[in-house]
Length: 86
Image (tube, rainbow, N blue to C red):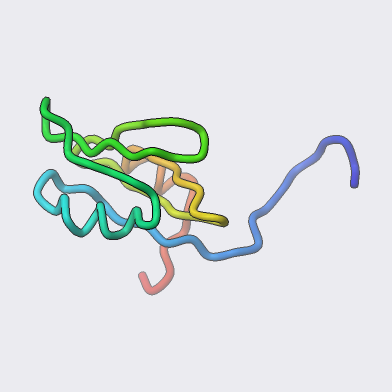
């Protein structure tokens, strides 16, 4: 394998938008990772392989290879991904 360059992901990745009211749907999406609603500001905290992180309303959560989680603002998500079926 070369030491540096440009990489393109070979797999489709699932996503969900946290709208501030769909906590159960987001927490189900995050499984098998552990998650819970925080006491402040209606956030969802998720425990990933790299530690805990929180998801705020209007953020997009992407689940990829080996349940890797990435969190984006809507503009950053649309800049990074093409949505299939649109």
